[in-house]
Length: 522
Image 1 (cartoon, rainbow, N blue to C red):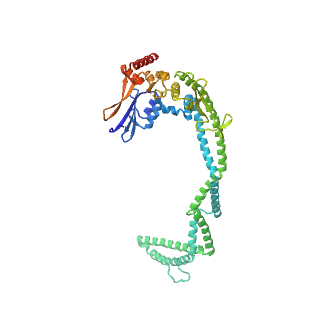
Image 2 (spheres, rainbow, N blue to C red):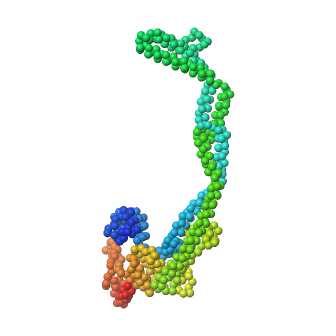
Image 3 (tube, one colour):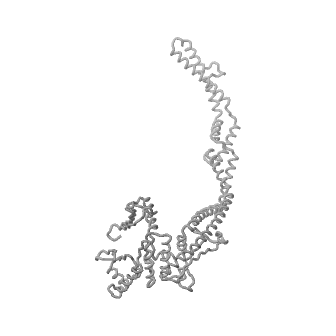
């Protein structure tokens, strides 16, 4: 963002067929197509915040990146360096092979992920075998201790109540006797007055006159009910006294049982209910731990089966890549012939590395990874008699640029995108090779939109439209602008690119010759 400005805005206008996958994805994101045109923009504020818009709707930046892969193929010098990596060379081959590799690669990826998960679980169980054995011993000891006591649910509460009763048996018996005497009388004191006798007398007095007043008759009935309650309570008190156990041996037995239960609650829970819950959970956990040996056997068998399956899928990937590599190398070699490398030959070296812990491919154990067991390397023999060498070692900067362009042209025939952007892919190239690169880019432009950033006049001359990016300075602010070059302006710019002197007659003649040759070729 220029100093003093609040934000920078970049906008693109892309023509997209309405039935294209990109259009469908854009509409899913809420974008609107304006008569088949999709507007894409990014806004970056001076504070660094970024916003993305697609078809008039705000969208995550990731959506733009997703659509860009389908709309524009961008290639620059960094992509050339990326092509030197073996992983990128394998990805390029897989991209060219298409479904022939994509199908088995997807199945391989699923089996590979499952094998990794099985290996992790198996390693965890095996590594922690000692810890799990110790845990099982502790659980088994606790369960045996609880089983020896055989506690019942609620037993601790029942015994606490019984111990309280037995500990105060004499006081309870005395209180029950006094209460019984107050209600039913004392046989040893015939003259004593008790509640039952008094209530019975009251009822008799009222019964004698109840016929004269219904209200008094109702009271007599209520007193009769009281008498029945008193006799019932007296009977219960007598039964309580008879049933009361004051045996000190029973008290000792109760306290001994409570001590055994307390030993369990001290270790396994606050009360017997919690102890029983712990025992249930521990029994389940012990079953799980005791099943580890069986689980190890199951996992080992699954691991071996997955390794065998991976070996077969890896072999299928190798076969598919080998077949595609022959076609890919032939196509790239043919393209290099039109890029001033008529004697160059491109080939692929597809190999595996032996590993005793790997999967079996071709009858031997080899190392494997998430994309199979193959190491794919692109080889180049730049001229007859030269042995094929890895492009990282056997290709100059100019040769690497042409190999990269040839690869992309081959891709254009199998996996086309609407627009290609080449950023100085002609670096290190000059002379006739530059002319051939310009010619090949012009041919590619017949089937797709091609944007080329170049400093080579031999390449620029082949453009259908040449643009000049130039800077202007008013003393305080530097601005960049884009100017369309036509007619005399284009000749002057090509002259400047050729000789650094736009007014040189020799340079102008050469520039006009380049333009004429490019038009004739088209």
